[in-house]
Length: 306
Image 1: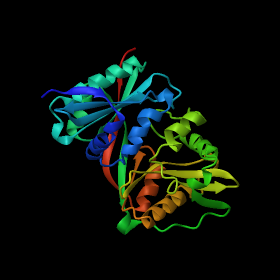
Image 2: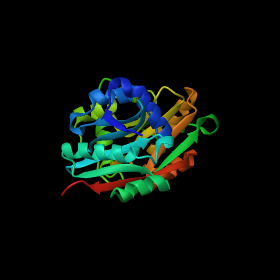
Image 3: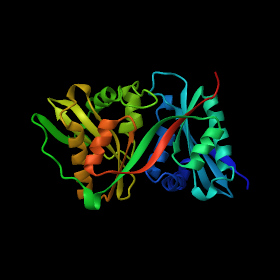
């Protein structure tokens, strides 16, 4: 078997999305978003996808770039996904070598990788010198049977959608930045300018602004939950956060309930989300909403050069 590695081209987006949906079914992947990210990603992220082909078929993808939102320089990522039937034949090793070469070329000194909690995947990462870090739990909610009803907004709070901020999303950016400063994780993701935030999050085509929900207090976005969709009947909750000055008021649960209820009314049948293992508060909220775990991923790390 001959494995060919080549860069992603915009016309590859449907094939890559198909690979990712099979290899990581606990995430939402949009061909439109993959195509858009390849040409509109934040310059500081240095994003690039590398594809593994066998006999002209795309069988694996490595998403690479820099963790530009961290104040710590030199952090990169190499997230690999290979079709299940093509694993164990060397595709992953060839793809990883190309991804690491690319990270070195753009100045990354450390590589992070998301690794599903399965013996073969964990063994692959550790054989290639990666060290285990924190875990992320992926959860699923069946909206056809378990969509929670919305709850009344707390006094003085208005719950609406991100579509109301279409003219000026800065209040949502400021809330996201504030909430992210103490978000649990291996890497602090707390340094990003408004222009890069817009490119990375707000302008992406899979952000559903009619499901992305915000709680507004005296003109301030106090809490939010992002929603990503891919044109199917599934939607994914991205970051859910509350500004530090507004915590303890039930706002995280309120915005998630509102988003889930609206998604069910719109015909979505499945809601996906994920939480860092250290984010007990959000895990507890999701359990109360009826989410059930479906997979665990570990974040692994390797030093590329010192």
